[in-house]
Figure 1 (cartoon, rainbow, N blue to C red):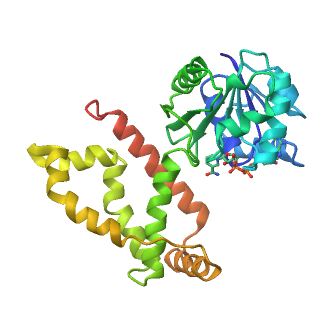
Figure 2 (cartoon, protein in one colour):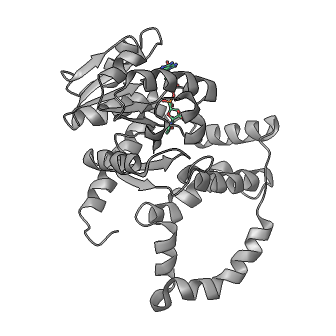
Amino acid sequence: MTTVAVVGTGVIGASWAKLFLAHGLDVVATDPAPGAEEQLRTALEGTALDRLRFVPDAGEAAAAADFVQENGPEREDVKHALFAVLDEAARPDVVLASSSSGLLPSVIARGCPRHPERVVIGHPFNPPHLIPLVEVVPGRDTAPEVVDRAVAFYTSVGKRPIRLAREVPGHIANRLQAALWQEAYSLVERGVATVADIDTAIAYGPGLRWAVLGPFANQHLSGGAGGLAHVLAHLGPPTEEWWRDLGRVHLTPELAETLVAGVDAELAGTDQQSLVAARDAVLGGLLAAKAAQPDLP
Ligand SMILES: NC(=O)c1ccc[n+]([C@@H]2O[C@H](COP(=O)([O-])OP(=O)(O)OC[C@H]3O[C@@H](n4cnc5c(N)ncnc54)[C@H](O)[C@@H]3O)[C@@H](O)[C@H]2O)c1
């Protein structure tokens, strides 16, 4: 594998390009927005760009690629049209992976009458050059061997891919986040806590442990010698009570306004660029610390 097509070079495409270039791959990038090439080069400042080529259209990028990573707008009609072009142009053995945050791969593959079996979701987390997770999701027609090849490719560039057995809207990590957001929004709506306090509850509470171990392994450790079996027997019944009280929210304009005002109050006086830089610096340190701990799964 030497050449990756990065189709769509917005927030996610630019970050994928940074990762691929850092791993010594050739990148053929494309994006129809005016000034896209300049924006990409600015976003990639500090990365060696001798292996980057920007081409005017998606077909040309796909024709030159050994693997295609698509990052266009999250709209079914746009993905259909784009995948029709990619399917037409790419060699039949080339995997067409979409970064889509939640569309079903079977729906995206409807744009590909030639080779729907090579369409797969390769969903990263922002920013892909830092966060290791990639969710690899097969559609109805995706060949198992295509999933294997996507997993092998992402592993080769330092990612931590997981494979879903079947497609569901939002894949899994975004569904888990959505479940948490629903309750967080509900707690604000019910006036139980402020946006800032809920952010503190996660960022200085369970979020710290979740960055080290997932929810199941953490819960297992909460059970001492009895592990998860003990926790489920002991705390399962009260947890079921809490589930019955969890909120279901609608994102009304009033609720959206309250949430935005809450985050504005929380971050008043904080410069957004500095916050992104601080987040990324801490993430880098955390990932290095995790890599140095062989006992972590
Ligand atoms: N932003 C996130 O946190 C995030 C995380 C994971 C996955 N994703 C997914 O990644 C994809 C891109 O999201 P983003 O946040 O980078 O959006 P974005 O708006 O920053 O970038 C989308 C880019 O696609 C370009 N584009 C429009 N039409 C195109 C076409 N026909 N061919 C190629 N490029 C085209 C646009 O000019 C734009 O630069 C979406 O499918 C999204 O669901 C986003």
